[in-house]
Image 1 (cartoon, one colour):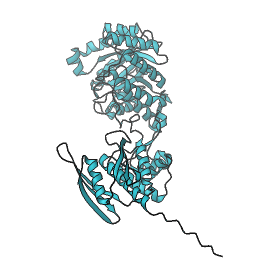
Image 2 (image 1 turned 135 degrees about the horizontal axis):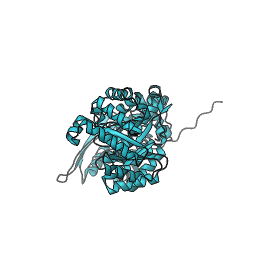
Image 3 (image 1 turned 90 degrees about the vertical axis):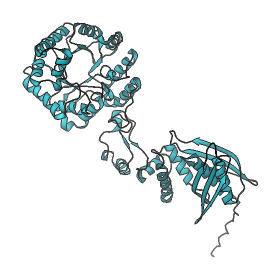
Image 4 (image 1 turned 180 degrees about the vertical axis):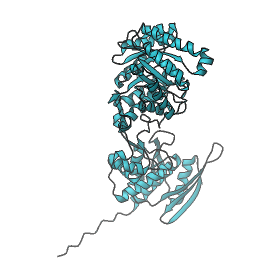
Length: 514
């Protein structure tokens, strides 16, 4: 298969994301990871921009083996000289020189005529060639340039010695069919196009960065310029991981390959996110936290039966730990039971039904259910004592200027018993109301509260120890509402107390049939 050259500009265009400035050490660390990833070209920076940027490109050029190290330069003598000096330590140095060719840029930014632009483009490539054999030229804003003039510029810079000609959609203006047509036009109209590599550099202002890049590949582009996580100016660049995995997953359409080590994609994404401070959105394709997460019961059931029903990429192939079945209110019994089995529980049908009902009730209160939540659900559901009382209703009136009041409803068989009580706090009021319903006089010996999971919607676990006469028992309750968890724990202790006071009848010996 024909190989597409992957040109990574995370350290140059990616660093231009607001707030994403990288120091020299961070650039070297990312560059080393990019080399492990297998990118062909690393654009390390814009050397003329600052002494720090020059130094960073110079250090990367000396530290990285394998990949070509590239620096960016305007069609200005000082830029080209600075770039040449910065990439000099590299075993495979490249100078990337650019000059705008669209009418809007020529008229308002450069204030030059087409003839002047053409002459300057040729000079820039020829001057760059004096320092470096590998020169890339970019006609900036190519997608908004006049096509005939663009083709004339491309032909001229190839004659001047440009080994790569990059066609950028600088402001993300093009649509996929339109951009693919542009690449096809250049291939058909430029007579010496076979003497160079056609590259593309697409921005994401309209969300078309990856689509335009892939359309270009289908129409003959041989190099794609992109960034990790799609970071870059404004809305960013075409995302490296999305381009690579689209090419890999749909070989039937593209018929090309890359040199990227796919298993390093997730690791590279995390490193870039950490060092730039730019968080990857959860639903980001390929490397987002939810990229291989399933919550819908139908999807979970399908994935458990056959992964490819809902996953077109194996998460392990891009460096993820594996498929993540998110347990939430949309999850089904299959995924729920599968997670319980992995946690070491094998419930019978009745036990599973009870636990699943409790799970659904909790899932309505919090977005995601964690393993610790499931442990609590199952442990609470394994009832070793009969439920004489069950908490049905609870309402609290509390504040720093009123005496807390609790209204409690306990189910006892088919009856619903209700009482209200005041207390020193909402929990104390609950316990006094429960005592009023049960008729038991209990003293609270110990009360503890802990969070089972993290987050604002964490499941709270309350453990109490109560004493009535000479009997001491403990109780436990869980809920996302700590007052409810407290009431459940107290009711659980009361039930245990009642059960312990029941007369224990020894079974009669079985009669033997002679």
